[in-house]
Every structure is written in structure tokens, then in C-alpha cells.
Length: 143
Image 1 (cartoon, helix red, strand yellow):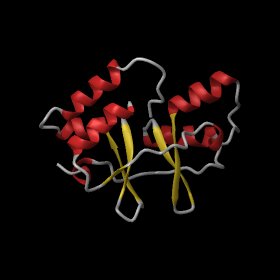
Image 2 (spheres, rainbow, N blue to C red):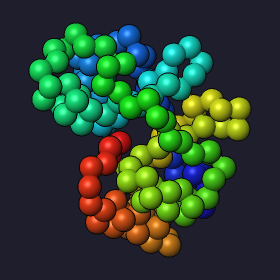
Image 3 (cartoon, helix red, strand yellow):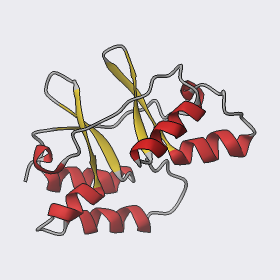
Image 4 (cartoon, rainbow, N blue to C red):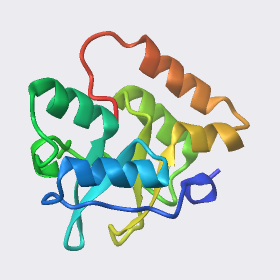
């Protein structure tokens, strides 16, 4: 199965200059835990509800803190024509639950989550990835 068959296509983004309050409000509106961060045409990061809670609030940062100060700027991604089994293996190795999806022109076209794969999963790859993510020890940024 291809990523394009199961990914979420309706993707909302934020930018590095938005505040974490704006990002949190958007996450609440669309019921998601992460947002891609774009600058112009380029994907420059990801911000999660966990980034806001752990990197910002727990450190005493206020709601006007720019997204750029707490986002993950090392963006891992997959392509829409990738095989979901291969991507799930990568999710497990990277210890992340979702990835932005790009087309071959490197344009954002969706988001793939373990949940997306699990709903359509016939080969158990989502469960195997979740098992790897959950069993890993140490500090990891879980997007």
C-alpha cells in the first residue's frame, strides 16, 4: 500500500513567526497534535502539542513565544509514493508517530500518522512500529 492511499490530505500549517498560542489554537480547531511549520514554499519544521507543553510552558515561556523557539527543525518526512510498510519501519526507528508527506517536487501534500496506517493496515506494520516506539528507552523527541 502506498502512503498516498492512507495519508491525511487536508493539512494546515503554521509559520515560524506565529506564536505558540496561535499554533495551539489552530491545533485545537482542527483537532490535531502537530503542525508542519512552513516558511514560504519550504517546510522548515514541525511543532507538536508536546513541544508547546515541554519545551515552552515547562520552561516558563509565555504564549507569545514564537513557534521557531520550540519547534523541531530537523524535519523527517516521507514521499507520497513510498510503501507504508517501509515508512512504518522508519517511524519505529525514528521514534515518531507521524511524518509530513511530500511529493517528488518536495511540496507538502499530507501527513501520515500511525493511526492512518492502522485503520488501513493489513500487514501489522503500524503495530510493529508502535511497539518499537513504545519499547525504546532514553530521551526521544516524539512528534
